[in-house]
Amino acid sequence: MPTLLVRNAVLLAKIESVEGTDAAPDPTGATNAVLVEQPLRITFNPTVIDTTEVNPSLDPFDPIVGGMSSQIEFDVYLKGRPTLAGVVPEWGPLLRACGFAQTAVTTAIPSSPEALAAGSSTVRATLGTTGSATADLYRGMPVSFSSAVTLNSFIWDYSAAKLAKITNTAGANLSTSTLWQIPAHMQYAPASSSIPSVTIWIYNDGLLYKFVGCRGNASVRVTSGGPGRLSFRFMGQLTTKTDSAMPTSTVSYDNTRPPIWKGGSFTINSVEAAVTDMTMDFGNQVTQPDNPSATEAFDPAIITSRMMRGSVNPKETLVATRDIMADFRAQTKSPLAAYWGTAVGNRVGLVAPSALYLNQTPGERNAYRTVEVPFHATGRDAGFYVIIW
Image (cartoon, rainbow, N blue to C red; front, side, top):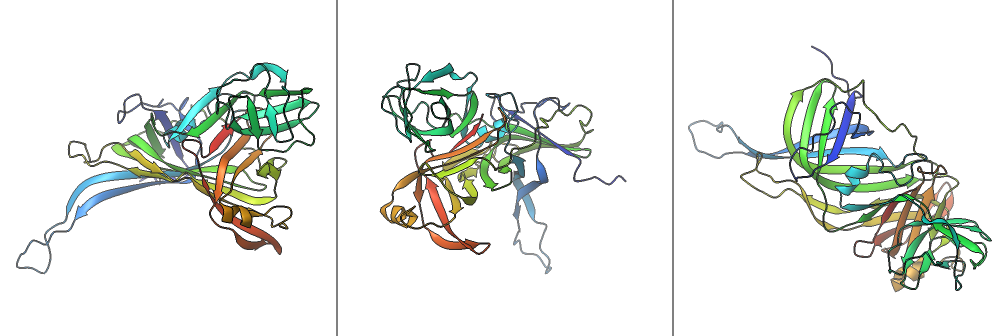
């Protein structure tokens, strides 16, 4: 009898064109493979009915096993594809099935850097001729400035007057001699409709589990000096568990190493802040509706609500420098943003355009003072953005 090894596993994921119908990921692994971390957990939740039927014995009759839902949990590293900005990362289909809309900006806007219009400052940029006059169109997108001022940042608010509010403070006022450009990138933003389901196949050293109709929740965490991670938890329908050869010879992973959060940035209200880590739980409530016509009496998973909440723990400062307590008590909202990585196509950005502080608790780390700040990412379908560029 062979011993099945935990490390010998492959996960394939593919968006379903018909909800609950197997999207048939490429069984060779040449496409649809996602590099995931151990442990890769599969949990089944059967309905077990213990009966109380009377009989002459102290022992009951057999319990009744009813329908069953399934849960899949795993982590992936936040990374892109170097030199391929604007190309879907491996984990893109998974994040879409967690209620995030995918926007691919495959060419820079504008194609060549362009001068800003008048009316900019250190934290605001009035885009030039090519800039769109559609409010919020560029919210959550990366933007770079060059020539008179060099800066990488994100747009956390954008008006029809082409005024872009940015998440980093420039060293000098942006001006008409400053060039701007939105680089090619992939953006993931929260959505409330047209959320696709995903088919997930998991090979476990000779076994193959197939799940359909999967949707789920995700959370993100990044720690100073380390890579970022997405933690996924999906619900779905198990269709089959079979013996199947591993697609080891042709599995095609993107072997890019994830960028490390160093030499990057973290800002609170467009001002740099030293922080240990940043977390965000997308807070999706996921359920599988009851349906006796379904194979296991449950329909494909659906997302019924979302509560996006996270936390940061910056070094404490004097009130004159930053007064989080005052902002918390006044319910003042602030943009929070992080980015890291240097290689084109493998840079990561996280942006909460309007964070509402929920508390502030004095803390410490390595004998220096910090402040623990939980926050709610406010805004309808605009609370939190994940960017690869």
